[in-house]
Image (cartoon, rainbow, N blue to C red):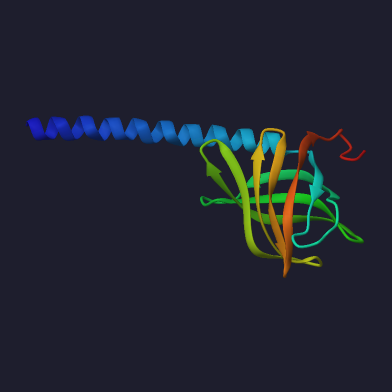
Length: 153
């Protein structure tokens, strides 16, 4: 009888812990989705091994939506890269280090732009990370701010 009682207590405790963790995770995801809706990443990128100053970059995130049970999120973003300026949905894994989200991608083919890898830490209203496009790569960093309702300047 003692064994059954101990098992029941353990089951209830683990059940509540699991439920609490699930609720915390859902709150974290909802907060991330809200913070990433209608934002502009404005900053700079560098190119490793090149003697040139950091260059400006801008990414506009129109919307972000959790996809499935894994780490995948769909970022609908306006990407300006070279002479290209496109809005497209991109499936990007987001990993969590405690409460800090890290957008991480490895050899992601983006139609019309090429194949990219990146690891970008989101720290409040700042971002920083690394990137690669083929044999070229470097660092990136900047600020994140809400756009006006039209989504443009």
